[in-house]
Image (cartoon, rainbow, N blue to C red; front, side):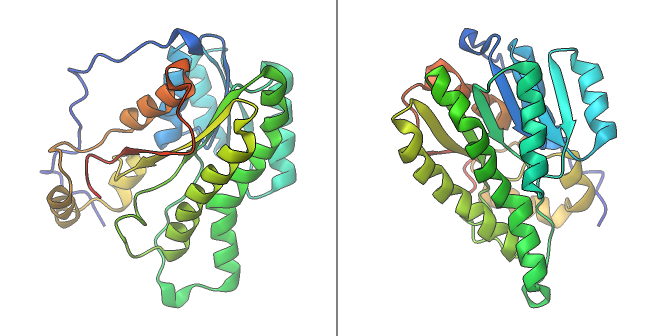
Length: 265
């Protein structure tokens, strides 16, 4: 599929004056899948708040480029999140350099399209590993440090694909629906330690990957018909919701879904 060039894919972000959160200054933030797309916007947004940011990604070139752009307070570790031992090791290295985690953003995922008739048991398991399993083990890895600090914020990135009953990727949609169950149960288990756990639910976000792979005239027109607001969604708006949930402003927010989908459900 190719992009239809006459369609405007830019959201109108220029008039917005975004908040500064003093409570995020010098906080240690970990982001999974932080080298590109929504993840890179989240890393950048925390960096602009004065946080110390560590992120994990498999794309070395994009990771290095982002660190060079943002400066020394942003660091990364190469990591295949499907390998849990590798995930734990990479997070440990970042803790050694940046300190115990205050904020975890479980962002990494891939919404690859697939036909339900072609799904094998092996592919299903790989999709769960790519889109769900690492979120739990990342939480498990940072929880003790947050408990020792007296609290923290964990933000899992979900998807409105299953809310909309979207087709074309059943394994992905199933994994993303399970993120909400993970959020709810971990919010209960960790709440006594003042660790908040929430889900941010993006709609169709106009990342470069989405534009390159799936944006067509028909898809955009259909999407506008389902969406309440008249603008496409830039990744920055997902990042802004994540910042709020990480900040002290959201101290009483936990176990819930926070939609960034322009009213498209």
